[in-house]
Length: 286
Length: 274
Image (cartoon, rainbow over all chains, first blue to last red; front, top):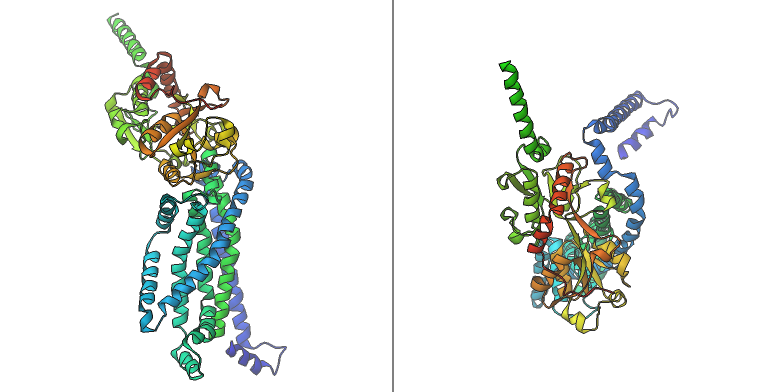
């Protein structure tokens, strides 16, 4: 960045006339662009022309890209997706809070709080190590099976708890890495100003730590958006289950493609935004 | 002259053999492996359709029907091999690893556009599986009473359309992957009742679900769109006509009814939902 600025500064004596080096660099750029365009186009043409030549293409098209089935099922899928969004909306804040709490447990430094520290370690070890589906089954069927009355045995409540348990373990680790990234000198400086340990954490460490790990957490929440679909295992009819119902009714996989498109419409912008945040952060750091 | 007689005899002989072998010939060169019939069932295959998850024994309604059909098509029991598929594998595009697939597939016009079905080999009543405690709480075999229950069903079955069209419950049904998950939800009290085909419901209420009860049934002959099971085949499978011929022969001779009487329990004790 600064190199180019210097160059322009040097070349500033004759602004109308580009240097030989600039002309050369521009021609290299144009050439790379032409090659990139050509290679992209040939890949697209190859895909569009060659795949339909495969002998089974018609059968695949009928099973996965069936316009009639797509039109018949898409509105129902979009409606079912609202449930995904709702589950996500109430899970995400719970996960963020629990994750923060667990991360703070792991960072407890007073000797008397050692049990808390151990709990934090055990919690992240266990819930990061278990498959999400298993936790959903155990919590979603097991706890209500103890004999809770309705509505307290709802799969929404316990399914959400399962998601919170698993994802807060991941979020806790990410936040902890953020806390660890803050140099000890910050804490020492805060202590010398007379801040208590709690205040140091709250006003000095956490604000910097959390800002550092926002992009990493964005990735986790994109993953969560997809894993909400796993709640369908214990009953709720969200988009993935609805697609499965349509699949079975029509003996056709097109509804899954419809569901995938709806997921992409949400996750692609979210991923791009996470990338943007990450790039911005990298630039600020360098 | 001698040559003529010999060829005439040969012609007569071959004609009579052809007549005797007509069933076997129907399936000739139409199966995956010449001389064997490959039949698919579920993994696991459930009671009372297949006993002990062992279709090779020929025990259980579908296993027995499969061997009867194979026999009519000219295949000995030795010439039948079994494979296991899920529903999704059965409907995936591309070559199949079975000649026909038999796991209580309901015949529907929508499905028929993607795969081929044989003639039906069984027409099932639907039944309401619930628990004693729900019955004691006042649930009865009337549509009015059923509407108020919290329902569950297996997502890949045709129980769901029947549930939504006939019972029209007040709250949306919860859906599950398989029978085991529905049972877990019933036992956890998350749902009051589930809709199954009658033979499955009879088995589950008697053996699997603690305190299970059959609240009522929707008899097949009273339904406008009865749930009929057919063999599932790849779209355009040439074997379909042979399978259909075998099934209609079994139906007309009463053999199919006999197999049904042998393996599927009488359900006269289950009240009809009004």
